[in-house]
Length: 172
Image 1 (cartoon, one colour):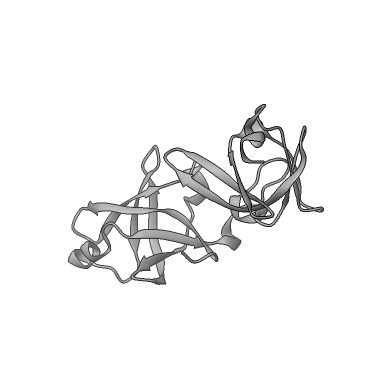
Image 2: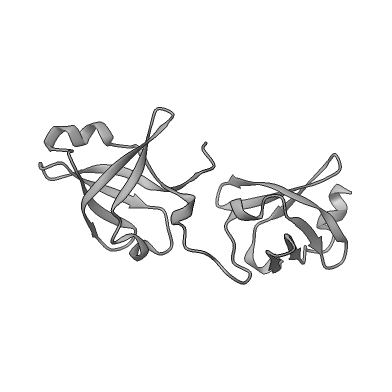
């Protein structure tokens, strides 16, 4: 996985016979991408740029896309491939909202236990992401639930959390 890109969605099926494709946008706000001009498609282990001729949102998280220079049957070669955008295309978040990639390396401070370590990664299991925190050689796993994150201090590279009682004790 290349850390310079973020996953936007996947090409699901053809639409019509003129090279148009249905895509699934894996985002809570698909409308932010209705004027998309290009995406990167992961082919093998390369992110290849594709210019978008036309994109039309279809309600929910689906859209119909026509890529430049992709005609008719050629579109079928792109089925089930993943769409990516550069991290620089993400709208900046403020306050306590954050992207997982931006807080890796931040100190994690719990209301009760104080500094519990450094955020090293996020593990995406089922529909519950987990923040991985390392304290010396010990791994601490914290559910990435909005309610637990009390403050994101970007200036001091610190995340303040309020872990459920006993959770951190399991690891230390």
